[in-house]
Each structure stands twice: as C-alpha cells, then as structure tokens.
Image 1: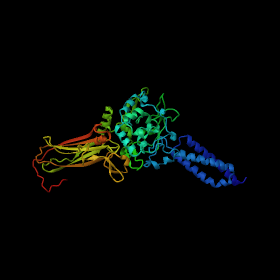
Image 2: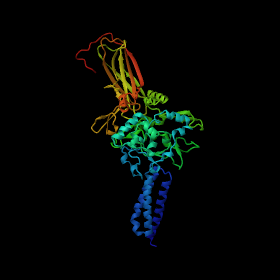
Image 3: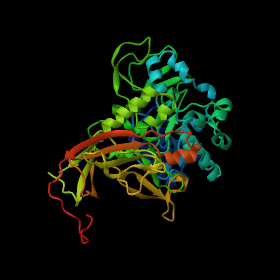
Image 4: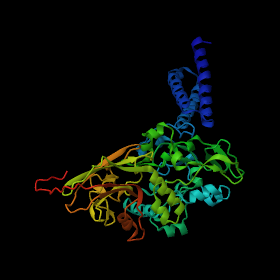
Length: 538
C-alpha cells in the first residue's frame, strides 16, 4: 500500500474515534468548563486539518467523517450548556437577548426572564411539593420562612399592583420577566398569563394558587447561567426522582434524594435574582449582588448568607442530628412595614433589628455655643456600618432612607426642621438617599420602571462608606437655651403616597423605621447678634 495513503488511513483511524469518545464523554460526565473548551478547540483543529485529505480517502471514510461532524456539533452544544454548581464563573450578562445562552438548544424558554430548566422544558406542577409538606420534617426552618418576605414574594400587595400596571402598559411583554423571581415555580410550570398577572390577589389565590420563593424553588436549583434576571436552572427531578440541592455534604433524607451544591453556599446563588437588568433598555434597575461584589465584604468571604441566613444551633430536620450551625431561613431584610401589614410580627421585628444594625448617624464638630440671631450650620454624618451593599438597596421606585433633622429650644419650641413627611412623601429638599430612574427624555419615573432607560442619580451609601451633609438654620434672637439638636436616620420601603396610588387611599399604613438617632444639647451664647440685611445663608 502507498505509504502516504497508509498514513492517511492511520490518521483517520485515530481522529475519528478520538472525536467520538470525547463527544460522548462530555455529554454524559461532569467535565470542568476549562477542559471542555480545550477539548472542543482541539477537535475543531483536528477536523479542520482533516478536511483537505477527504478527497484522497475512500467513500466509507468520508461518510464516517460526516457523522463525526455531527458529533462535533453535539460537542459544541454540550460545551455551551449552563455550568454546574461547582464551577461558576463571574460573568455579568447585561443584555439577556444577546447572551450566549441563546445559542443553547432551546434558548431562553421563558424570555425575557432568564430562568431555565433541565432540557429547556416546561415543568410539571406535580414535580413540586407545597412548602407545608417540607414543614412536616423541617419544622423550625418552615416556621422561619413563613415569616419572611420570601414566602410573600408572589402575594405582596405592592408588587402585585406594580405587576398589574406593568403587564397592561407593556401589553404583556414583561409578564414572565417579573414573575420569574417572585414565583419561579409558577413561571417554569407555564402557569403565568397576562390575565393572572392582572388579577387581584384574592382571585389568583382562589383560582390559580402559586407559591412565592419557597423551599422547592431554592432547593431545586441545580446551576446558574448568569448573574441577573433569574438566570437559574430548575431541576426538580435531576436523578429521575425528587432531588434537593443544598449546602450539606452529609445530608440524608428518606423522602427525597439530596445533592451537595457549592452554589448554595455562595452569594452568586442570590445574585441570579438580586441583580435586575431592564430586559429591553438594559439599564441596571437593581444591583444588590454587584454592590456586594465590589465591596470589602466579598473580599473577606462575608456572603449574603452570612447576614441574611445566619446559623443557629439545632436541627435542620426533626429526625436529623443536632448541629452546631443550621442556616436560618428568616431572610431578614428591610421590609418591616409589609411583614407587619401581613401579620408576620416576628419577621417584622427582625427586619427592624437588621435596619438598626445597618446605619449610624452622628454630629460632626458641633460648635461650643450657638449665637442667637445668627445662622448656624450643623454637619451630620451617616455611615453604612452593617450592610454589605448600598444603603438602601433594592427596587428604585420605593426604597428610601433619609435624615429628619430638628432643632428645639429649652421651651420645646421647634426652631427648624427638615425631613418631615408632607403629602405622603418626604418634604422637598430632604437629605435622602435613593436612586432615581428616568425615561429616554430624562423625565424622572416614580412608578413606571418599565419605561426606564437611564439612572438619573444615585446617592446611596456604599458598604463601609459615609455621607456628610450640612443643615443651616437661623436661630431666633428670642430662643431660650440650650438648644436640642436631633437627627433621625429613617427608612421606608416605599412612601405613603406610592402605596395610596397603587392600592387606594389608606389601604396600607406605611410604617417608618427609625434606623438610628442622635441627640445633643448645645448652649446659647449670652450675646445676641441681630442678622443684618447683608447676612448670607451658608
């Protein structure tokens, strides 16, 4: 036989089995992402080099090569599938419509939400248990979760009122987008429609009951495909039967399979829903995860779970072993007001406590005395001492923190105040901390976040950061000393004005949480100075 032809036959005998074996290996085994890409690159290179020799090889080999090309295609798809929970990268896909996930067979089945399922399939409702079933064994954890905003994610009145308006205003274009992180099971089982999104809470609870973010939601997530807009992968029957993913390597259950998931121990698990990018304008609507990622907390391995799921000593399940640390499921955050409204007082108090640990307010370099008849300037410092993200964080239509600064004389007369509530909102010129979004023309948006195209301003306080603001006021000549200076650091999840607009007048009473407070007395000077016509406000 011709030596050159013999070499070609030998080459084909080596390349074809190699390509076939590597393709099948990556299809059926958990191969690290870096190794996958290296194998794909090698296979493409071998196939490219092999093409010029095709005409010299007998027809059987050419037909076999066509088969190999098909296998290469499978290889590329497999290599581009969502990565498992042990090998997560740190990419940020800000434009879901253009993400590489679109190249995976099946694309984004719940677009514009980025949720996915094993096999890109709509799931069966019967694959999920009610949270009460979980509570039969995980009694303490269920009790904690029941008093959290996670359990109320679908039925929370402000969210549902906004969803109703968003669905109508966009002609249903955002129906799946919002719901994918407020009822992931409702979305991935194909239950979401415009009619449901626009119905009342009472009607949907009666005719189409769906869970919020419950046990079955988080513990059926097997992987993530990005870091925003709900880029999780739901896998309720990963092993052909009920399977739960969690942070314990020694977990055993008589009711379901258990799989250790490193993803559940990390902040990027939370980042799938706590980064929100506008699905059409790509403006960064919420960036709680990114705020943490860019802080010193992430460098020191203080995760979302460290603060919002701190451990307690006890049992994870009633038949389980005693453990030194079980992750709590209170998910305490900042929405004390809504939890109180929904009758969850313990969860509400925990939210107040967390807010109290987040911020600090102090006076800076107070004057030794204040002179009557003159303007005085007082510096107030607000520090983010306990939040691993901006203070405040969350949805821009509502979250607001502000300073309520007051001055009284010895007779109790109020000489000055800035930061009170007027007409259901903070008064004009209040020193507040908030993000403001706008439409394409630069008009501020109070409600219509679906029209957002830009961030107009953002003066929220960075983790471990601070802000110093000055309050200037005229002290009357007849003021009686000493003066009492008071500064409250206040927070509400949304204003009374917004609640009245969305739900109707006085349907909900919005509670203001006082996060921190400082009070100081300053004596008045005995010499009175009268402000002249040339005195300036400074």
